[in-house]
Length: 312
Image 1 (cartoon, rainbow, N blue to C red):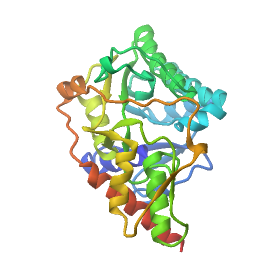
Image 2 (cartoon, helix red, strand yellow; image 1 turned 120 degrees about the vertical axis):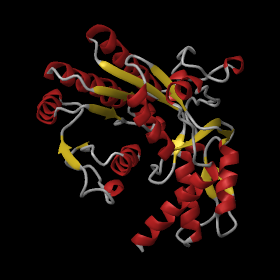
Image 3 (cartoon, rainbow, N blue to C red; image 1 turned 90 degrees about the vertical axis):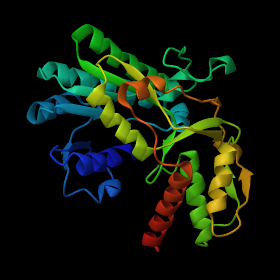
Image 4 (tube, helix red, strand yellow; image 1 turned 45 degrees about the vertical axis):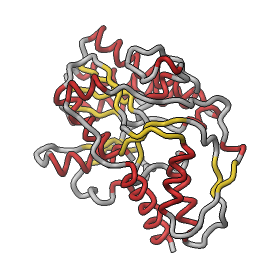
């Protein structure tokens, strides 16, 4: 999701920039269908240092946005080792490939708000200095990714910058994430492809939502304006429970929608309170979120409606 929106942002706003992407031989390309003729896709594998070294030596990039990860928290409980290998070793391979190539690009390492884990109420809003209490294998992997980027800055002077992005969504959001799973089910109910109700997990978690298109604009500004070795929270300005967000989506539906708890969607441990302090990033870059959550959710629901329409 995020990589495709970043490619579109760069192509639209910086047409002089040559955009390359990393893919594996079976990578789905649906999200890039509107820009496939304007980006160059290169085959390599994060878990294969040789393939990365070879590719970077050929391309010699000036900026790298490292967004790839095993990013689904629920799957990380079932596949902890694979999540750690992909996210921590994969990131280390990328940084080693840059280091061994002798290149000196700016490198954005995309960490996650999940590194903070379950914060205390008196720690809100969450600042970058808050203790890290990862509550899932995915969160542990993002702590590792975050810290290895900082270590390579300190040890080798590599120009890494880290972001801890809070919940961001919009068109192309994976179906396994709560708001996208809800939107897909609503679209299927509207189309008569499934019966009501929508199946849900924990609706009491508090999240601060941002639009993915605001996020990628922030990522570009990060490398434009921020010093290497720094870390920033980035997030939206709309805070609510998952249940309140679900009610917003239900209000956008063309038919009445009910919901029911599915115990299979509950995690072994959950992070239920995520409210960021983004003042450092806003001060450094002037960035502000611009897209209202109502628009984000409407666009997400329309995305799923369009996908279902193409399948029929």
